Image (cartoon, rainbow, N blue to C red; front, side, top):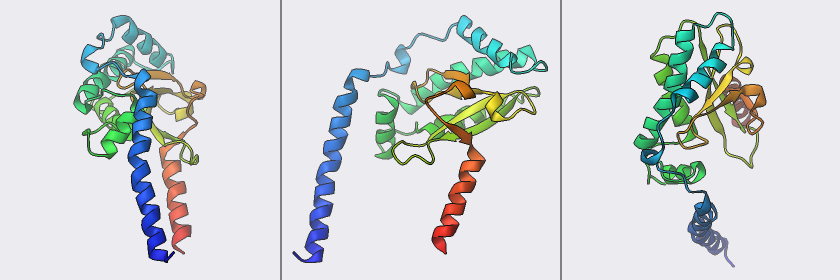
Length: 203
């Protein structure tokens, strides 16, 4: 068979299997359908207070009022983003739809970008924000981005993960070192590694 025919055959098979794989993915995750954000119960004051306590416990110099504001923004704002992003599916399926142009926004780094920007609007004096990326070295898993909050002067590993993506707008939060699902690395470290790889590949 001529090389051109082999290439066309390969491309045809890929074009055939791509939608099949998408349908299979949708069927496999149909049982994990996400509750539409407009049907979610509003965050409770108890939930906000619990996160505020965890934030304040990050360091003795953290202003309690700032901890409450950070907790409220972190819990309430992702619910608004879920409406804006038109979340109706589990995160991985929503990612596929964003990448196909079927949804406007909602990849993990976009959740993190938007939440970080909203938190920075608060002008916190006794809290620090960090960005982290997981799975950058794992070809079998997609990269994941998040925001981390810590006490001033502390690194991200002393902070709390604030991740709105994994539950479709319902905030996951917890200590970085106890988030065993994702091996977080500082975003700048990941970017530096990628740049070095690009430089080596270009030689």
